[in-house]
Length: 142
Image (cartoon, rainbow, N blue to C red):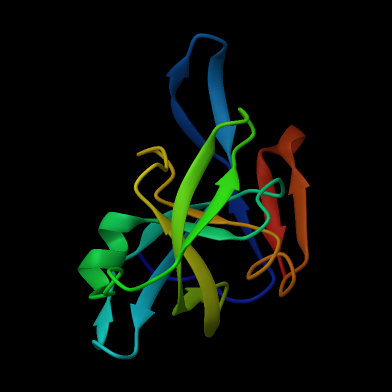
């Protein structure tokens, strides 16, 4: 999965049918890497979530990258459903929208399998301008 250049338009992705019908999500291809281990993921679709305070990632991806979580302090967040969940913070490289930069990610075992990477306010929205156009089923990142 190739990364798109800056100021790119992306189509909304249709996720499997839910009880309410088709669900369109703003998913963007990203690559994650960890300098310490020289490991780089293949392309992963990340959810752009304006309601997320920070960027999140599944613990499985963090372990694959070689992050040692044993001595990291637990940080807790509360999800939209009011459920608290545990995370561990690590700075990794985020490759997205034609840019590569250090980004703080909060790794958790409790993310939904359909959203292994979530791009939030700090780490993504503070670096890009995002324009959502659900009516035309596309969004722009610049």
